[in-house]
Amino acid sequence: MDMGFASLNGKKGYGTLMLKLALEKAKDLGITTALITCDDDNYGSAKVMENNGFVLQDKITNIKNGHTIITRRYTKEL
Image (cartoon, rainbow, N blue to C red; front, side, top):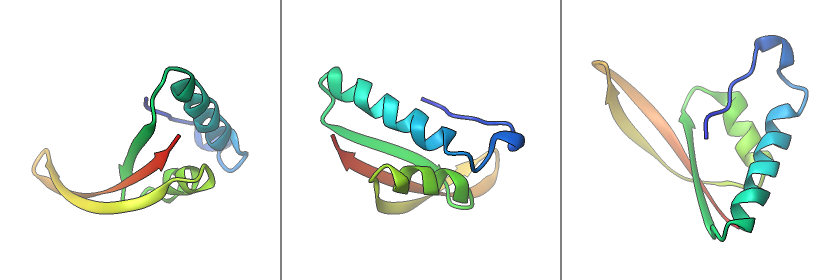
């Protein structure tokens, strides 16, 4: 799943609600653990995950198009 918003829709709780609904659907489908990621500097996405009860598992380093990117990995039991 990938979520994106226009900046004019930021900080209205839409991302938190969308993720909450997606997690409910995942649970209905029998998924028991969720792993979700975002770039380390994407504070809005990190907040959405934390608002939905995700816990930061770790941060990993990736190389994408020749650039080093740090990725936050969050997990949650459903």
